[in-house]
Image (cartoon, rainbow, N blue to C red; front, side, top):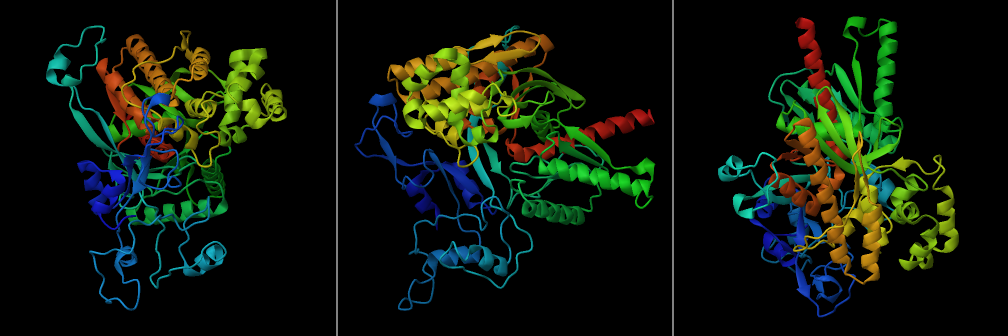
Length: 596
């Protein structure tokens, strides 16, 4: 948090759209590009270096410990009187007691939510004293009680090529293959949510037409829930990761509040298929209570039974974009994220779907790779890298691991233990996750090998991408009944580039370009086979701005209509909107058939 715009501009580059967001009455945290300065130093491994290992080094004007391995940082302006007092109240009794707006006490304050990791924000002074006394030096308390806990909203401005101009539309060849000509497009700045909360939630989202009242319970990571009322969807504020009893109580507290405020009485509930999600267990517990109440004739008659719908994770991602745009027709859905429970019992995360309100067909995905140690592999991406290299090199895996420094870093004994469980499904579940592939590449390049927070390794990898590189790596696209993409050759060529001491920024960019090429190629094929021209992009991986911008630009250049999340986050916080939309539209269809 900085006291004013001029201070923010000392540390970050700020566009006009970003300035408007920062100064708006919603006062979100805006992710801005760090302002860089030439330090004269030239280490080859910096994510801020340009031009490979021979490029000059540019250092951020901010300390390295703030948002490390990332070209961006979140800034916000004060939005309460207390914030202004922190910046401007006289620092000593010798000064005038009148705050001086020309002389702030600080250039910036590093702000974080008032909570223990993985728990909801603390809202009472007594609880704050009990939980924080051992970990903070002081508590600044207030005599005004907090009615509802709400996190700060986090947003980012993305620049993409806007709708095609008339000249381009009228001259699309029949095979829809055209070269990208920037002069035929205009640049469009749009809002991208990372977290939709204070200032934006529970602002309703228009669904264009009337429908029944339903509830989407969301996923477990970055949980939100969504209620529908009339022709609106009402997404909740950010609830957080559903990992403990405290967060579940916060979920119930917020749900009861919004049901009361908007007078919503859901007649149906949508939930994720993952049996171990706390949000799913909560929904199923409501289902059990409902059944018991009906059997005992305590609440409802059998004709008014609350309905429950299990909605596949990635299908809900795609449906969240469909909801934002009022789409009910068939689309090509590309859902890339870290983890989602698949209908085959495996972990999905790189899905090409043909989807509409009635359901979806899985048309393609990345090749399954074991995750050694399951959840541990998500926290330690180097394990996923070992798994990929075992698949690629077979018996020569130790030689390759040695060549990229893994043996020296992790030790032969530890790596052999990982290799020993790769083929045991109880310890190494199969995953098609795009997020895990980004993690593996980040670890292979030595950029980041541990996720201390979700997406850290992939975010660090993105920070190495640079403009002006068009090359990519080869990949094997298997054209069977369901398309399967194998990145064996991609990683093999990537390691060859490492051996040639090609810069990590160049390698990281070529890898990103490879994913863009794969998406465009698969979408184009599916479009021709199914005669579809509408493409939906969603999932946490598409919060990668380099990937999203270049994918959208490439798809538009081949004549596709591209839709992505703008009103809710592309990550799992958007899942609940997708769930609610599918349930609502299916109930409308069922009601229409019954009347017919």
